[in-house]
Image 1 (cartoon, rainbow, N blue to C red):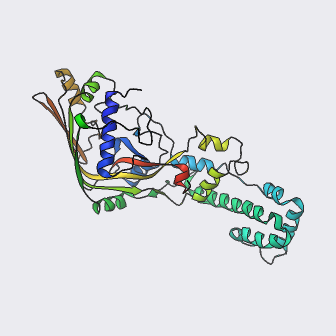
Image 2 (tube, rainbow, N blue to C red):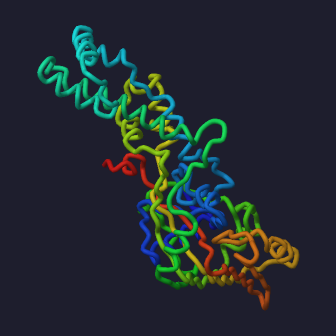
Length: 369
């Protein structure tokens, strides 16, 4: 399938960004428009997403569920009833086990029950010692995950938090290196066949935020000679870590145990982790920068009406960042002179800007292979 002009220049921008900032084409993803968080809540909203399988995550186009919502839905439908434990170890052993528990001076704490069972079963029911311990561990894991999740659901629910906070991200960036580089469409490389989404991965925005890439004005721009000079005062790739509401062991159980139990229905696993599942990817880390200075030139032959149209979108932001003007954090300038268009985008130092994500498959996110 042929690559349209706008997808081509955006693919080339993707390749240039990855090359100059040493980003992995095996999992890096641009976000459009860029993220300009002004609070912890706004930062976490950018990161608390199940990303789509695309090089260009246009959040005007993709309506993605949150990581928290998918995780919470899974926690609330996993179960390991006592009847399953009884079935696995046998009714006679189950009766003897409960008799033993009642004979103890004090009931063992829940978190020690798998170990207490195993020690008892190795003497009294060795053939089911392992499966019984696994069942009790699963019960403990599900109950612990439900308890940790409870404060974040229902009335007066807490905000699902992640790490980093905005203040810690700002501090990280201040201690991170600077970089500058250039881009020219005349010698740029639009080939993304070696990336993690090598198939048709179209662009959606055109020359300015909200415009369609197929509009004549956008195609004129994409087919012109474009140059970019870019400088970041600081840049850093920072890991994302869910807060106390999250239990990686629970998500491991859900991913690697398709059966019922722990799933409450036979179709539960497939809805999240199947081919068309809603929870196949996660954001492992993200690219943040501080202090952007970007200058773009284009020799596109825009009519006076088209120039007026482009100028009217100054507040919306332009390709390739699509950073909407947010004084004083981000400012855009545009001018037309002697057949050339010049666009400048600058962001104020001390305000992190999110440019993209490192996306990982959910099994890799959980440390698998």
